[in-house]
Figure (tube, rainbow, N blue to C red):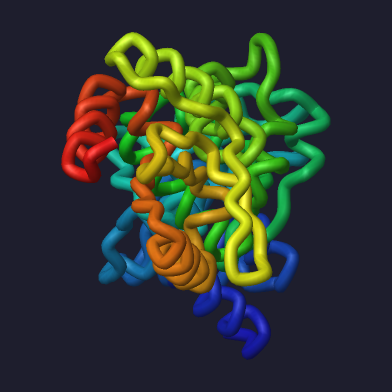
Length: 294
C-alpha cells in the first residue's frame, strides 16, 4: 500500500473508501485482498480489515467517507465528539446539507438543518461537527434539564461557547430552543433582577419587608445586595454566568466576611433555586431572620 494511503487508513481508524482506493490506484489490490477475506465491505463502499470491529467511532469515520456535499455531525453525536458529558443512547444523528446522502447509514440517521447553521460547521477532534452552540440547542430537546445544565456549564468552562452564543442560536421553530432558553434565563446575569423580584414578592407574602438593591457602605467600600430581608440579613441571587468560576466564588466568600463585619449575614441562592424551590428558599430566609432576631 502507498505510504500516504496507509497513513490515511491509519488516521481513519482502519477504514478506506473505494473512491479513495481508486484515486490512489489501489483498487485492484484492494479487490484481491477483499476476495481473500483480508478486507470486508461494511456498506456504502467503505472497507475495513476483516479483523477490525466497527464501533461508534469507526461508524462516524465511515459516515464521513460516505457522505457527499456539506454536512456535519449533529445533536448528541456532535456533543460526544466534543467530549462533553452526555450519554449517547440509541442511534446517533447527522445533519446533511444539499446533495448529501438521505438514508440511514452505519446506524446514523441524516436530518435536515438550515443552510446558515450548516455553514458554521467545523472540524473538531478529527470530525466535522456543527457549531457547539447549535449542537447544544439540538441536544436540549433530547436530554433532561439537569443533563443540559451540566453540558452548558462544561462547554462554557472549556470556552467552546459563551452564554451569548447559546442565546443567539435559539429562535422560533428551532428544535430545542424553548428548553435551552428557559435554562439561560436562570444562568445568565441579565436574569437576576427578575428572580430577585420573584423572591421579594414571596418574602412579603411570608410577612417580611424586604428591600431590593440594598447598598452597604462599610470600611471604605460599597456593594449592592440583591435583597435586604431584614436589618441583619441580606440575600444574593447568584447567577452561574458571573458566580460559577472558582476565583469569583473566592471573592464572594470574602464579600460575605466583609458584610458580616458590618453586622449583616449573607444568604446565597440561585435563580434556578428561586424558580424550582421557592418555598424552601423563603423558609431558609425567614428562619435566618428569626435566628438573627430581625
